[in-house]
Length: 242
Image 1 (spheres, rainbow, N blue to C red):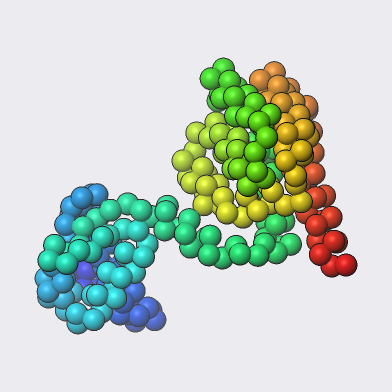
Image 2: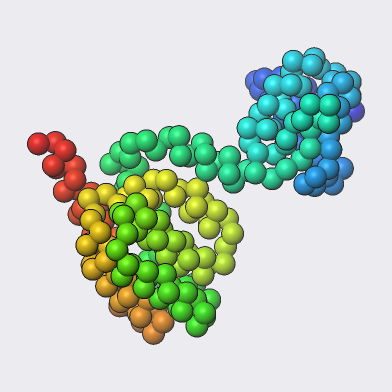
């Protein structure tokens, strides 16, 4: 089985299942061959022979890779490499936020504080006039009366645009994965009037402080904006408890 076979044996001795070992081995093979999106993987029989395992094990490994957004399996064609990993992660995250707990809320808002308040130095350094114009443009849309869910989508788009200024794809991807729960937080206990009034004004002041690179004002305004979400969340919980 060569080096990959030895790797599977080592992982098996470490307690990993045969399927996990094959998944790891296929990943290794993809990297070693320099395969990319659109390339085909060996046939099921070839994979069985290469790794000295059963068809059931290979099929289960391919199912896992498919669920992770790495391969697409078609009848008579076989497995082709794709890259839907972020979409798969987004779907899995969505299924687990049907009800946002207080602990989840605190964790998400704490993460947002780190990015949108604490990272002021990186934001100021990378900020351009085009960024400021884009943020103002998104915010102006709050003046148009729309359903709360649609306003929430705009709210998320504005904050995502702000985070994109950090120019870090990994951070932006994680932020987008969190969209389902962030949206729930953004619309909790809010009305259209809140989005059109308080939310719009909060964003306008934050963007102006950002454009002026006023650290004290920016951090104070953004922290207050995110903390206000906490106050609304608490009020909604108190009402639900009575």
